[in-house]
Length: 278
Image (cartoon, rainbow, N blue to C red; front, top):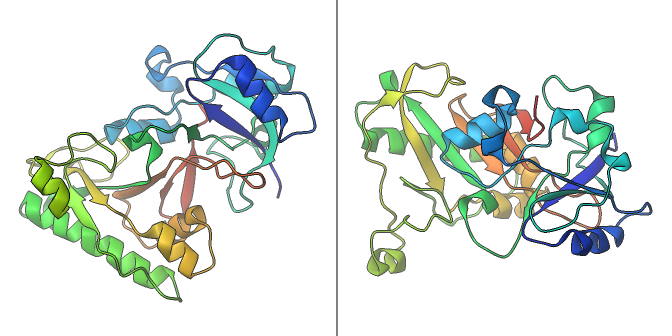
């Protein structure tokens, strides 16, 4: 079922955004300012934002639920910052509306939420993150090994075609983090800082009260797996998430395309959580 999509842009003048967005839609481009996460009460955050924050990743923003159905009537935004542009794009067909949001409401606001920009940081990279239950392992090292094992098993169960043969690693920091490696030599050797934290109280969305995490599965291979199996990367992540335990989450920052732009989302056990506030 087709849905109208939106794009999130960072650091561009409002007039520039309107010009770029207008190239992709038949209607005039309209933009509205998206509030910074720190300025939004936590009870208004989307489920996706709660998970992303627990990962220790910032930079994404929710579309407030109050904007549902109001985007087309908004005034063009001036100045710089993050803006929501009505690009008239289509979201991916497999994506279901956010929890608690009707299909009509989702269509009214669009699901093409993504971060765009040239800088490399965790919010602009796909992330696989685990909080391993305390009662399943006996150390941070065991937790890291189990998380990687579960991801590899999910890949084998999810795809009937060939899989990428490149290796994945676990680490304390996400892909794109400036402190992921301890030294230039470690960067050269592709030896990220390992996860070594003691077990701690789990985020509220997890079943286990105590866990090891967040543990990051670095250099994930979903993009190559998707290519080898004639799928989009987001489709591959959604499918793989069905075979992962509830304590592993996948974040995808989204991707703007001329058609069927990919919405930023967090995948967990076959669910797609979008950055649309409550």
